[in-house]
Length: 418
Image 1 (cartoon, rainbow, N blue to C red):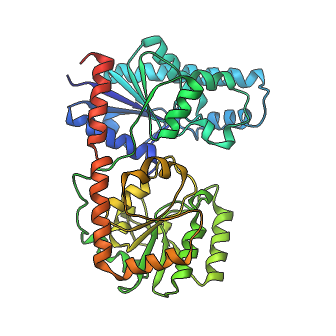
Image 2: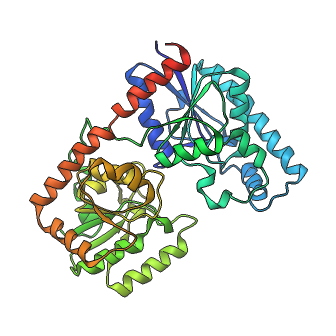
Image 3: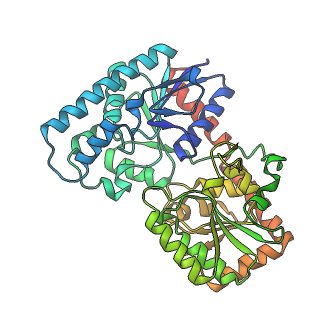
């Protein structure tokens, strides 16, 4: 029986994991004719099925003020409590409006009951679910205890109550085994692991005319080796190891291309990377000004490409992250049949490595042996094809849409009786 599903988060826009994965869930739910609606502070979803409440965005001024006052000490001013409560009460009223407007049958909170970037929204949602007993499937991507910046705070009772809450009408979904264990240990909540997925039953379309000139536009020649680092420039991405790899390849045709910008936490890091690349004689290009969420032209008339356009042209992908909740970029590289060098971060070791992929792996740093193996893959197309085709089949078995489909069906039946 078809349901109206309400997705709730601070933002459904852009290329972050929450926005991407929620869209995939909605696609799978539509196969059973469930219609998805979207509640958020920022949205790029169809306005006809969206309810945008600016105060629900984590970057909203009042929420930023609250965050400045709750993450630096253990004592809370009464005035801070009043402002948290006032915003939570207002947001709760907007949740009631959203549910009424679209006749919602079931809610899917996306990460807003896991990471407390918007505490009033978490409180509002918890109270709404308690008051209405509406069935919910909470999809948790990362928890507050996984981030050091949330370790000192003056809101322990709010974190206990809402991040996440323990409710009989809510089922918890996490994206890795470590999160499942920690949630059980800290909150006594059972949860199901549903990893990030890709539509491996439908391979990507071939390069079209728009994206045919990516190499040329980025200043790469046809015989250059396009080594793609498909991430933002932040320290946990370990990009210095990608520079080291290209340095060890000792081939001027190898160009390291970084797809996204630095952002708040990465400007000093970017300066360090630029200095390192210069010292190592590595041709590194940050092409964030040519990569966007949608294809368009910039003010100078130049083409803006999507990250997927870049994947088509890459010869090799580096993913030397020191920590990831799961690792969307790894699945993307496998989906586009590209060979990958990956750092063995903890979630990869536990959840992904045992599946049997053929990936080049490093333990924290690049060695000459790894560089030799990369060189072999870059110059031996038969070997490269064999590896990427094997990886695609493994991913189709473990990380395709069917992984979500059966689990969501079971959850909805359990919660609603249909």
